[in-house]
Length: 219
Image (cartoon, rainbow, N blue to C red; front, side, top):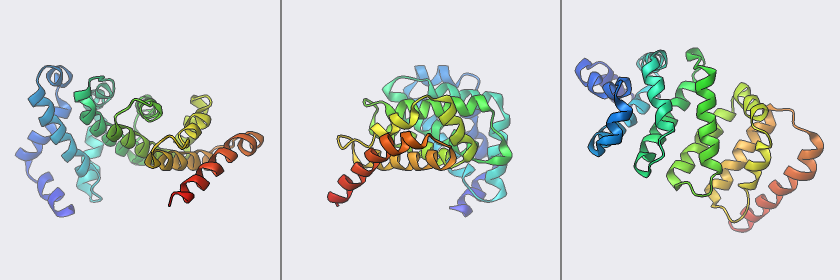
């Protein structure tokens, strides 16, 4: 809670231990060679994510410090590229931390970093073979980002046919949680981007309507 976050942030020695992995120049090498270190980093990242979500100035200050550190941002970006199964929990934490930074207007996270994050989220969410927890995290955080007009427009302009790809996630073969997330992403994209009216009417809307009816029939 807020009180615990404030206590942690006001304890320098504890904060140093929590933050040391994210600022480490050898983080990627260390987590690749030591499984125990990977578990430690994952726990630390989970705490970092909770701290930067704190509404008080301590959380905002910490988020700003992370975003200003090239090493920290680089570490988070590189974790997104890790492909091993063991690194999936770290990827979840990295996605959540970067999403919080991207959603904080005063931070002004670099466009390149946002694009790397969005690319990872889309790749994970649209891939049928993705592990469920990672897939859900990628989808939910992408839905959060797509609520922002500038990011939503960026997604639509940079990724061709992305609305069609997300619409395919509404297929009844997919789990309800995936379809729900896909519907939210589509809603945000359509809200913030002037899509082709004919395409929406003739292609997207019928698919969305069918899936809504199917979901209602299963309730």
